[in-house]
Image (tube, rainbow, N blue to C red; front, side, top):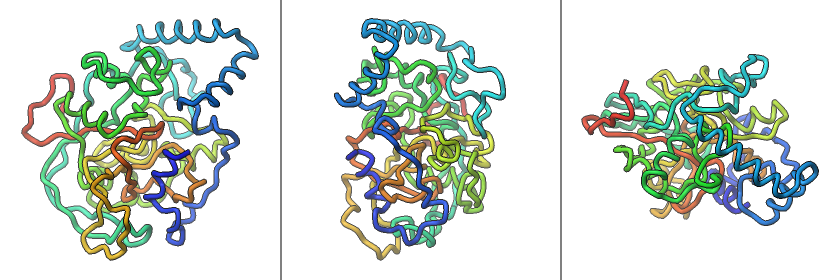
Length: 348
């Protein structure tokens, strides 16, 4: 519980007075498995083994998992959905949550250009570390259209022999999740991938500018929360389902005007920025520290237990040590304009 708990110390155990109505939605977590099924722990492993053992012997469980993983791994570049009936799609999603193969492939993500200039950063209406609202500037830059996926990250670790994430088995991702955002990555893992891809992590100003656009909107799609525009815990609560990541780009109505996907929800995204107060902030805290990195975007995970508030707004931010990893942390990459563009990806 420490990993998720520590994160939301940064987005306020005690600042609930400034939350919006949707911030206080309480979702059901009836067991450890609802949050920790992908985490390595003896107790979790025992629960999973006991559940599977109702129908399968231990050799059956291990052998079948390996066979399915190997089969789907061979179909990495093939689009063979597990579900083709539109009635199988969850509300708001243009594609199934799990499917064989990949829509995007393993090459680096396409990138979009964000022009130089000012934008509105932060807010005066919510948590103290999100303000004060002010005008910030960036130079022109490029940023990934999508979060980095399991398949893309697999290509990286295969090429570089980098350690695989905790949710990978035999150095490959779970069946049906090629296009889900890679998770269980530290800041150093994310930085290593972006560097290998000829890119870098975005700073938090670049990230927020790309998400909010020119009109200082609260969410990538507008200023009003829409339940089925993003993969958020509020959405999973409304569906009465346990949450999980979703394929990148699954929520077409949740895209920003600039064409970026999943800038709200799905996974928290590492940035290159230290966690520090905004200019003019007088509500200082001991948590502002050069050892913490800022994350943006919120995630699918229900953090209501920690009274963390709603994580979907584009001005929201969290902080964490660079060594932290869990199943709601991922990333996307950025690049300086004029830098060599990878043949693996394109700029639009």
